[in-house]
Picture 1 (tube, rainbow, N blue to C red):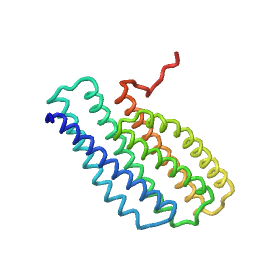
Picture 2: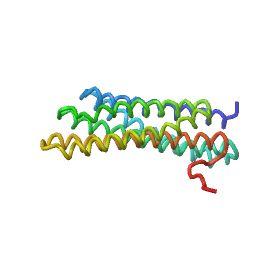
Picture 3: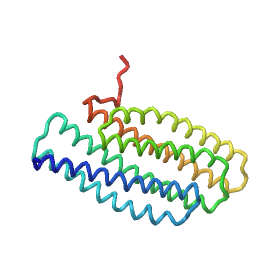
Picture 4: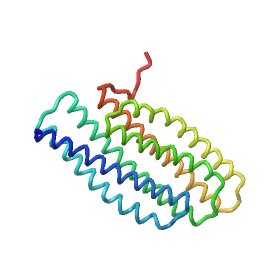
Amino acid sequence: MRHFDVEMSDLQNRLLDMAGLVQEMIKAATQKLVERDSKKLDVVSSLEKEVNVQEIVIDDKCLKLIALNQPVGADLRFITSAMRINSDLERMGDEAVSISERASDLIKYVQLKPLADIPKMVEIVRSMVMDCIKAFNTSDAELALSVLAEDNEVDSLRDKVINDIKNLMLKASDIDVINGAVDLMFVAKSIERLGDHATNISEDIIFMVHGKDIRHPRNC
């Protein structure tokens, strides 16, 4: 096997390892939120440090692969897609940290009724993340395309949650209820952004496999 092929395989494995860390962060952060488990914060914080290190290592590896090998065609698409996916994974980790920190505040308050729709968002988004990572590992453009279709459902649930929270705040007189509602609104937006990043990764996979950029479809 050529040295270049070995390096490309190592790049893929590093991205998959990083994706696994991010999945653990999302799982810990959302469990902390839904199950009100305060012990999950340390897990998320520890994993974030590893993810940040991996982001730098993977970016450096991509740049060296391009500079030293001058790849073209499918190889170049893979490397450039890997760089974008690397960035989205790191941002997913940031959103998991944000969710975890907000959950720390929410645990202090009485659980709010709008949380009922948050677990639905969490379930869909975690499925999207799992599928986009699997699609990257197997170069499955069809699976990546299916992730894009789920994003609309996440957006709809976010809108419903935020609307419920606003209605709750209008009726609330307890400052703790209002503070909890604000935190929950930010959580809903963070969960929705996780779905956006999974969508970005899926779009990159489709480009990687087919060479087709679908990020900004033209209305022709």
